[in-house]
Structures are given as structure tokens and as C-alpha cells.
Image 1: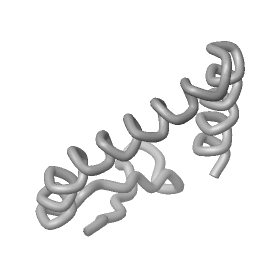
Image 2: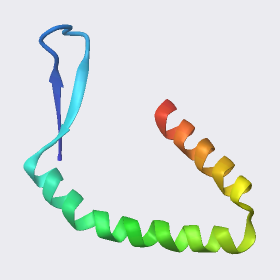
Image 3: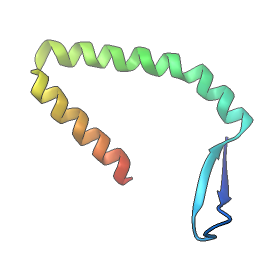
Length: 67
């Protein structure tokens, strides 16, 4: 599903690309993920302020970038 490729300009750098199977799976999963995210957003909106939700998203985004 994933393929690792070194860059020509700096062989230490490895980029990760989706294979054809990975791209097909992504096409299948994206609508499901979008529905899941919408359900979470609706639940959070019912119980948290805009500021709290923005903080929550910032923490998640930061954690995803660090991992």
C-alpha cells in the first residue's frame, strides 16, 4: 500500500508514496472517514465552545505532525 523512495538530491531523505492499491483504498475510505469526522464534529459542537474545538483541533494537528 505504501512505497518508500529516496530522493535524488539527498539520498538520506525518504519519501512515502501510495501504491496503486493504496490509492484505491484511499478512494474507498475517504467518504467513510469524512462521515466519521462529521459525526465527531457534531458531537463536539453540542458540548464545547468554538474556542475549545479549535484548541482540540490544534492539539490533534500538532500531534499528527510530530509523529
